[in-house]
Each structure stands twice: as structure tokens, then as C-alpha cells.
Image 1 (tube, rainbow, N blue to C red):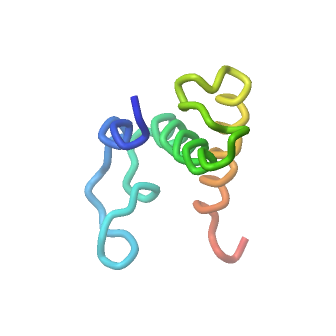
Image 2 (tube, helix red, strand yellow):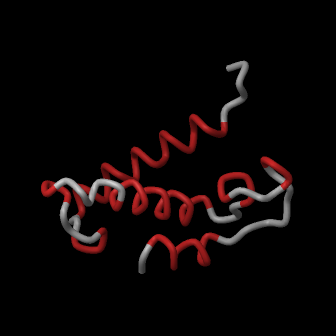
Length: 84
């Protein structure tokens, strides 16, 4: 399943986010799905580099673990209050 297809799986609660529109981070009702979506998007963003030239589904367990950790860190940072 691609990250785009995964977006439908993440689930969204109706809300108004940035610029009067709901964003994926603010409206997601499936934290694990959001992590998976972001991890795949981050992986796919590296596809222009031959070291990363494989699909997310073929990346292997180690890379899945590492990119999910990266996604969780990014989500945690984005969820924090600007005053923290």
C-alpha cells in the first residue's frame, strides 16, 4: 500500500486546522497509521538517491524501524507547543 493509499486508512476527525483547512497531523484519528504514512513518505522522498532506490514495501525491517522512529520524532516535534 502506497503512502497515498495509506492516507485514506489514517482516518480523520472533522476539524479546522491551518489556513482554515484540516491537516493530516491535526485531524488524524489513527496515530499508528499516521506514523506509517509519514515513514513511507520520508522513505519515498529519498528515491532519487541510488542507495534508497527501492519501494517502501521492499525496504526491509531495519529501515522500517528506523523510518518509523524518525516519523514518530517528527510528529512529536510538530505536536509540541511553540513555548516548549
